[in-house]
Length: 201
Image 1 (spheres, helix red, strand yellow):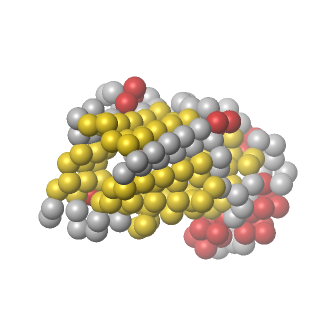
Image 2 (cartoon, one colour):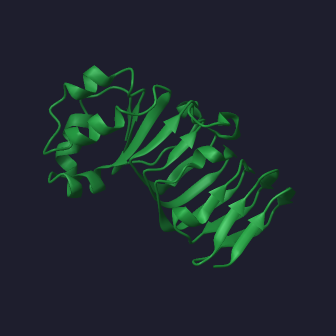
Image 3 (cartoon, helix red, strand yellow):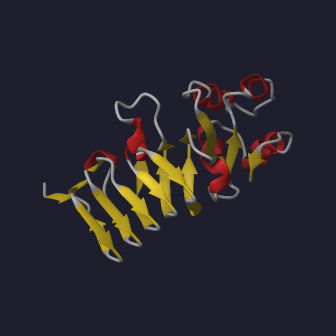
């Protein structure tokens, strides 16, 4: 399997593509500015070793599942594509939590399911709109969230993200994915969310 190692460089205004079948290593000591990063690989074939991505466009061409973006520092980036179970920000249990971070990023062109934002300012982020939705400050509001009449078995989803680190400042999910998984409808989920403060739709 071909390996693509990009490290110890400052790169500006380039298009970088990690193709299906490649294993891509980004970092250490790598800064990408105003670049387009095209990802066509599964999460296991993308390894981030503390790169800094500044004002980049990140095009996820293949669904990226359970990926730790917390291993990169992201500033002013724009994401497109589908991501599920991904984490962004500064991960508190990482041996080097300072290598992760996120600010001023735009996810309005992305579809996020069960993604968490940790130890960051969600107010600096542009998050995807309905049928995606974002619940702010979920850990502090756990009793309020659990008390709601979630439709079908979507309460399982709420219980699962309330097991996140206490530094989790927002969770973004997809009503489309939840309705399919938990045998309910987008409308029923929306009816509960409309009762909540601190939700971005």
